[in-house]
Image 1: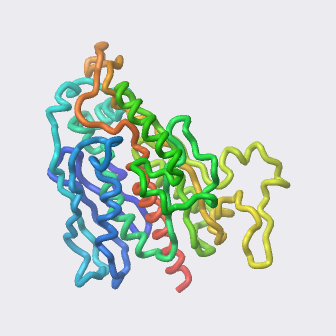
Image 2: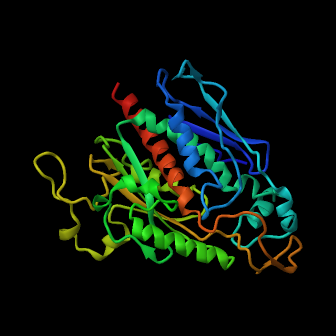
Image 3: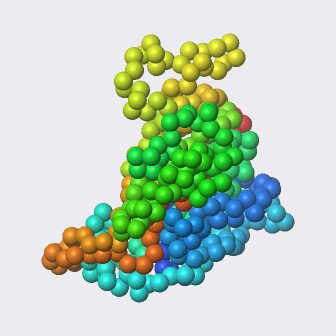
Amino acid sequence: MGGNNFGHVFKLMTYGESHGKAIGGIIDGCPANLKLDLEKVQLDLDRRKPGQSAIVTQRKESDKVEFLSGLFEGKTTGAPIGFQIPNADQKSKDYDHIKDVYRPSHADFTYTKKYGNRDYRGGGRSSARETACRVVAGAIAKQLIDPIKITAFTSSIGEIKLSKTYQELDFKHIEKNSVRCPDQDLANKMITHIKSIRKQGDTIGGIVACVIQNVPVGLGEPVFDKLHAQLGKAMLSINAVKGFEYGSGFKGTTMKGSDHNDSFTKDGKTSTNYSGGIQGGISNGMDIYFNVAFKPVATLIRDQNSIDKDHNEVTVKGKGRHDPCVVPRAIPIVEAMAALVMADFYLMNKSSNL
C-alpha cells in the first residue's frame, strides 16, 4: 500500500489502523533545536479526539501521544521524530455484521477490489482515526512556522451558513461551543440541527473555513508545486472531503476581471484579496483563506441497499458509535494539514535562499 507519506522536506509518514494496537507516525526533516511545547501538541489532539461532546462519536480515547525519538530536553534533535497514540476503546464486534458486506460510499468495495482484503473493523486504514497522526505533526509544524497563524472554523452545517466574512468574526469564540463556529447564535442552531439529524439515524455535512495569517511573500513554486495546489492536495487527502476552493473560488467565475483584479498599494499590499493571498502559485503576503467541503458521514444508523462480497443484494445498517457530522472534529485536522504544507514550503524557501 503506497501513499502513506506527505511532504517534500518536512515529511510525515503515518501507520496503524482504527482497531489495531496503536496508530503513529514518523516526522522527518524537522530542524534541530526547535523548542517544543508538548502541551500545545496534546491540546490539538484533544480538539480532534472522539467523545468530546454530544454531537460527535462517543468512542472514548484519551489520545495521549507518546514520543519515541527525535526529542531531547524539550528540543528537536534533527533526527526523525517517532510517535504513537494507543487505541484503547475499540469495539470490533460492532463491525462483525459488515465483514462480507460493502457499506455505501465507504472504502469497503474499493479496498477489497484493490488489495484483495480489508480490515472491516472501523474501516481499518481508511478510518479517519489515522488523522490523529496528522494533528500531531501539524501541531509541531505550527511551532516551526510561528508567527504564521492558522485558524480554522465551522462556516456551515447543511444549509445553516455564516453570512459574515472572516474579517468580521472574533476567532476567540471558536472554541466556546462544540461545533466550533465563531458566531454563537448560529452555533446553537447548528448544534440543534446535528442532534435532530442524529435522532433520525442520518448524517449531515458542512464546510470548514481556514485563514492563514502573517504569511511571508515567496512561499510556493510556480509550476507543479504551486502553494494553492499543495494546500488543495492536503485538504482533499482528509477523509470525507469533497471540495476545496481558495480566494474568490467559484464565485470569482461570476465577476469581471476589472472587479476581480487585486490592485496594489504603495506598501506592497493589495486593496482587495480575491487572489486569496496567492498569485502565480506563490504567497504574496496577504491572508490566505480557503474553504473545505465535507460530505455527510457514510455510516447511517438506518437501512441502506448494498451488495455483499458475492454481489448479492443486501440491506446494511450501521451499528456502534459514529459521528453524525465530522465537521467539528475536522477543524484541527484542516489546521494541521495547512501547517504541514506551510512548514514544507517554509523549509524549501529557507534552503533556496542559503
